[in-house]
Image 1 (cartoon, helix red, strand yellow):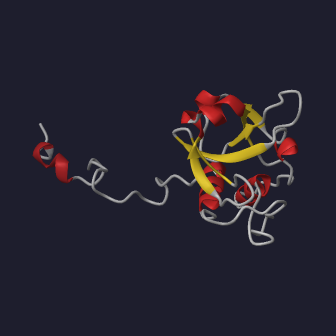
Image 2 (cartoon, rainbow, N blue to C red):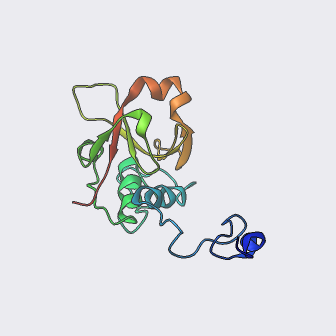
Length: 161
């Protein structure tokens, strides 16, 4: 029997990671989607401006919905077109049950035409979006909203081409 038996709790190799800071190797880097979601959240309160937004930030003082998505994903190293209908085709389709932060969520009345609105998914049914003229970039629980649920068209996870 080893005399170290009673000292196992003081052995650094066997110490519980609880209560200590993870090493740089143990820290998880944020995903591209998490980077995009954080970038979109930094724009909360910015005015809606039709045609507004670019990879570098607001244009004309604000963002429209696809401009906000374009800007957010540019911070994650992904290039999107500034048009909701094209963004709907710029990535892999994701079922609602598999949404992750940063996924683009799309809305529109006519299923035979391109979606007319896009938001950046955060978590728990919440998105950040630039809703309409006269409004500002804000969050909304679209999953709990009868209005948005009735218009939901699907989600896309953009990726580097």
